[in-house]
Image 1: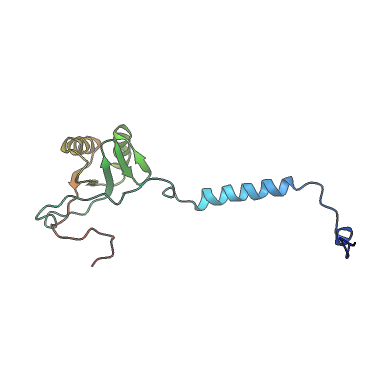
Image 2: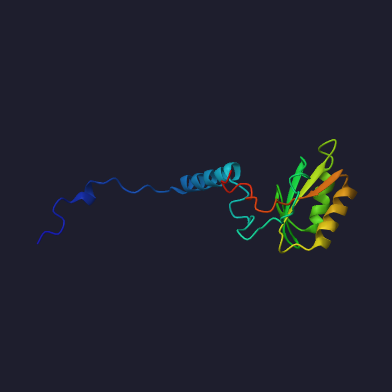
Amino acid sequence: MITRPLDLASKLRPPPRNFDFVFLLNGGLIVMFFMLFGSRFVLAPGLGVDFIMPEMPGALAGAARTTHVISVIRPGLIFVDDGAINFEQLREWLKTHAKESRQPSLLVRASASQVPVTDLTDIASAAHAAGFVRVVVGALEPGQAPAGDGQP
């Protein structure tokens, strides 16, 4: 009985002795690719689906353009452009970013259900101490759709 009629194994080249450098080169290129083109938000938590801005009549009338934005999800969890930080790190962040513009202003987007007013006042006082001229707490008009959900 013939089990290997074409004897293809004898016609193949012998396996190469060492491919370790190609493996390391590929691994290095993959690491470099993720470092150069990766996003810091891929694995970082963001604003969840339960993040609800507070509603206040007249919110649009008090709207103002700001130079910096932070999002406060719950006490101790604050998101800035660089990722999640705590309140002590926020003080340093405010000090460094207050020097970026001539009239720095801060928009605080806080969750309506999870952030106490004392945290908002602490953030506002830290921002003023760091050199921010204006601190605005974000709110929506009643019945207004949140920005970014595709509604006009």
